[in-house]
Image 1: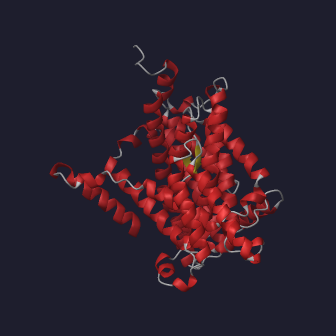
Image 2: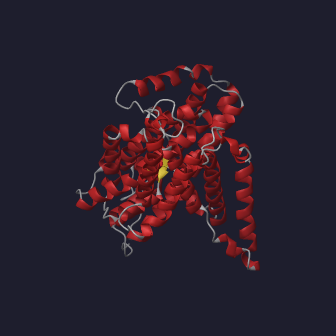
Image 3: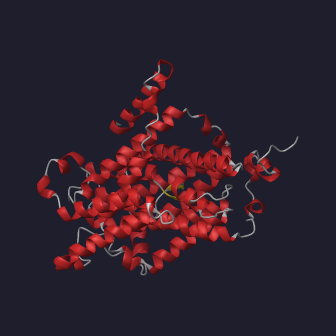
Length: 430
């Protein structure tokens, strides 16, 4: 049979290849294109600060003193996922990083464990277990060939859940934007203005405004980067008048020291694994069900990005091979103390618009993230928590799908609207 227009013979066969097709001979990269360097760099500029923000969000229910460990988990995730998913995957230009759905599911799980009185070390161990189980499930879905079926999930279901995730992210960031030290409790933070910090509010609002509107003026510079720089400048202004803000120690407005260069991160991971034996059966069951949810969301998020890439580049991805690669990458990232993620729309499209051509884009993004972590750890420590909150609130707003509002206007699509609404309600309440 002839190959359809816009597809190569290799990509068509690869998309239909059975699970035993996962062989090293299929992991060969195309010749490195100079566009991959620029695409990987541009993707890193978006993915790296977002990964830090997602990591801080996941660890927020443990208390503000764990912000640095959360940031480190996000950094490990963006490095490992970027490199491994590109090495094993089958989608050109795809960039895999920690993402909003993962942050929503994992932060909700951490909050649930904290409300049950679990110790922070035990919660961090359970977070790693959830990530590892979800990664193994994703790899299993790829081997079983389920990747080809995920595309049949109805649009109203996907739309409703992505909207709910956006709302969950926004709700989780409002206490940080307010500078409230009441971790994870939105309503209590809103109703106790005496816990607010006007400096955090100002920094967060400046960050969010610049992130949203700066691309209209600076088209070649990602809004996340300009927002991050604006937040740092705002913090620097307040630090001029308050000497306490010039210290990393006991400073609740910033992330704090990451200790990337020493053995602190390795010791922390070892400590978590030493508490595995203390995990109770009921916690294992909760972790398994959370992992099922996480694996499904990450798989949908990745394949949704792949489908859009196909449309933009006239190519075809291999869904089962991509799920297998994503699963392995997520498993390894969590084994190393990192955070789960997926093939991300924002970073991928930024890379594509910057000239990305091959799978090397994702690998280069991971390498650049590693260099940024090693060279800029002292800089990262000074990032205000409310700056990350401002960035994530904008990301959450962009995830909200307003198109289903049009469904309510016509009788023929009204049922679709109620499906979206039901999914949003269940996701927010359950």
